[in-house]
Image 1 (cartoon, rainbow, N blue to C red):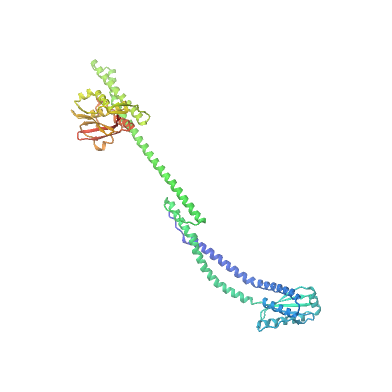
Image 2: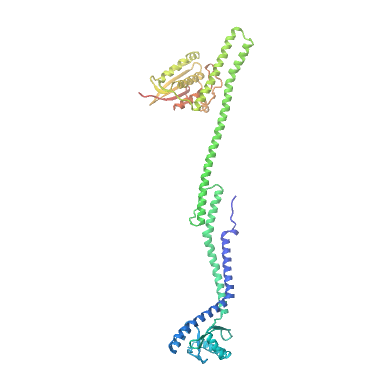
Length: 503
């Protein structure tokens, strides 16, 4: 089943939404914290910084040798830390006030600190002022803003060494206005963040989504048993490792399936081979049954006749000879089947020796002289004397016997059988050809099969069992001799090629 990617649920879209949500949440929380706590933080920081600077000033002020040094020190601190310093002496009078420059802000600070000191001293009697000086505790006071001026932070630090009080004031900038400006800035920042998130989404797509799409495409092909495509992702991260693992899995599955296919093909071949063997076994049993049926019927019939004394006395010997003859034929058939089974099993051993195959051919022909004369068949020999071979005499006699009896069965009336030996370099071709009808082309390759008959009627006098050519094939194959059959202008020729022993 083909897997389709749901674009509504794509990883790029999810990452885009998550990033945008997190970014918006961060901006929102930052804006809330800034609105609620920024002003308090700013004031607290300002008060702490002013008080620290006053303490530093006090330490340096107590070390100053004269008023000129003090004035320089005050000017330095006022310029550096944006504050105005006024000292209230032991007589509770303002002293050591630097001259304001042309800066309107500096003039306003001086006026504000002077007004504050006057108001503070009016509320505090002399006894309380002396007590404040002795305690040495620094305090800071916040003056709320008014329409015409911003609020101030004023630090009041007693200087017990000189019996004085140091006043330092710094103005609070309009925090609300700063907050509104920051809020406006965040609007533009948010617009920029959107573009940033879009760019980030493309980066996500290239880094994550595209590799995953490639992996998904390869995995989809793998699900269809197509292992031709590999993941080409070369990153050294988790996705790269996933691609390598998928390629490794693809190779292993491909090898496993290839092995499985080969095993399955081999199994199919074995099953087909077994079917053929079973078919051969059935045909073999059927053929054996057919071959045994006639002699068994004859033996049974004649034996019953003899038992029941239905034959004349002079006929009994004749029918007993038939029974004996049919028994021999059955014995020959059984012997041939055992011989063929032994040959096909490969368990037999050849007893090789050197001998003249020309003599073997002459010896075999002599055994069939009577039959040849009865059939008025002419034999033409073209033999090569002293053709020595290294083979099994008995088995090669079986081969020549089968070829000669086969020729005698199929030669035409008053026909000719040609027995020839032809030199071919270090080999000799032995050919046995009979005149008569040829074998149909489609049956030439089948005549070596067990019980296969070209001529369905068999000459029983020659004792054919239908296994001769199968035995010949196995014997010649065991000797590594080539052999064959072919139709000629005169009839049919069987041949086999032996290797000579060169002297």
